[in-house]
Image (cartoon, rainbow, N blue to C red; front, top):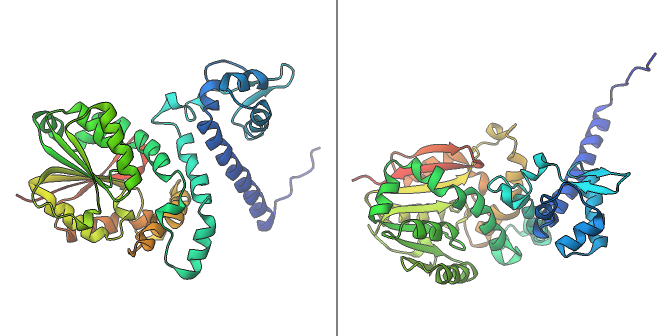
Length: 358
């Protein structure tokens, strides 16, 4: 007869959870490494590998690859045949881990753990002085943000995002003026510029680094219908100049988000449309309890979004400013008919569509 299983105490159960958290945190870092070194991409091209073959094919150190495989096997990411000494990446796992799986490559998002961790010392100090942490403390921020945008925005623009606004695709084909606020490296804008050569596109971003990358990309892709401007949207005066303004995962980071929204409203022609992607969440904490990604989003908010805004003298809205506050701020800026949509490819964001009255 089997001995009865004794119930664990609350303390023991929490210890188990903490152990799982440590393991998952380690795996997140190792998954990020696997993405950056393209190990997952290489593994997906063959059914099984020895550590030596994998390292040679990936042009990496075998000793490092073997240790990385140890984390992947014990973490249940990669399988291991002890008899044959072969490692395999199951197809079901590759569907969330390889570049070929984009826009479903979650390995891209794991890079944020290291990016945020690199700023931990500055964040800890900010808990005392309250002034926030500037963008300069976040190594690889624009690189990782561009890759994330490639998945959630660029890959979905024509099939999913543009159709949220009835008739927008046809208008872009005919030729309209478009402004992308906090355009970053310009990937979304350049995608639109290539697809709709009759339209004209302007990107604005406060980062010299991002604008430089965008300008270089525009030169390579030969898109004469684009221009990129270094600047803060809160300080730009472009009344009634644009038919469409976009902002992808950007407004909550701003030093003056309310002013930015007002300037966006002013920049639109009568009847123009503002299309805003921003984090899927609610303004009140209680409404976010149970949301699968809420802990991750509050972490991103605390360690980056809120902090960079505070560092620039802003209100520190944070990523979890929430749907309710976003709608309030859109209304205060002059948008009276904003609606909110979600898209199947993007479980992280809401899409806000608001028009300027004629």
